[in-house]
Image (cartoon, rainbow, N blue to C red; front, side, top):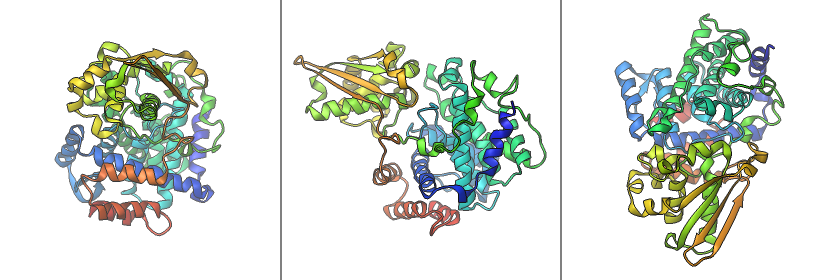
Length: 458
């Protein structure tokens, strides 16, 4: 028992000076990726209602920035809007081992809470590190696949817990207040997977709600509101409510060996992470053998059992997506655009392609197999394989253990900068993009959070 208290103590005691240069640089790396995705996500239809909500409930020239706009509002509404935007393109970071997206909740909460405190680089880095730890460790303690089986979205549920500790760290709450913030967050944690039924916007909402809830929990705790001290391990606590067979020991095991910021993956493709290893395989086969989409007779893809229900069934639905969200969770669609266009980025996940007769014809050639062998080292590895049978009768095969963007197969800084430039070009001039990139790469060295906000707001 007392896992909640011991986890909070670890988070409270973590100090900027104890972090390595590599760990601090990793926060910068993840931050640039977050800003890239949130900026582009601000243009999505699902981002307009939370932006309008902020306008209705209150703008403030000195408030927190809604990224990608000139709108400034209350910190909690900024957290909501930015979290939703950052999750919309399905290009946000992910921890494979935990099967969730920490950055959309944690960084959104950190930026919002920073407007209520000194907003220092030190506090921001500390808060991001502990937020990722809590977010990921609560998911691991649940067992990553268990919440999905119950219909819960871990980015929403575990993200709320991580966001609360993040905001508490930035607001410099004492250890008891941080404990209360986490306890309060346990009554806010939510996130239904029912968006899979019709491709609705609530998947994105889950991320924004987690960020907003974390900020609110920390502010309430700062003013003396209390939460249960056993919110994680207690009889009616988080680990029992969202899964069966949870393991509280995973909340603290191997602390800082390494921190989970170092085990976070960056997405190159605009879709569910469970699809991305297979897309890597398809692109390799097509490129290495000079194939065109017209050469393909049949595609067979080996899918991890944990992700099969998300991206591969029912096959009739996955071969006939109706919305962008549907397409983001359709393995046949991802395979079809990869074969047809040689990529599966943001510009491929559009309604025009969903309605394309060429794409539809290719989706009918894609079939998925639930391969239990792939799960032998899951979730440490997210392997996939693909077989492509051509119209000429040849069969080509590719397999991968670590999809592109994993720490074992990472995007370089230059590749990440290319991603940032591509995503933010519709909103930022080349000069402004250079200024933002420079501010983040030198965050804590030459530039501070204030200069970064100036770059984003100008």
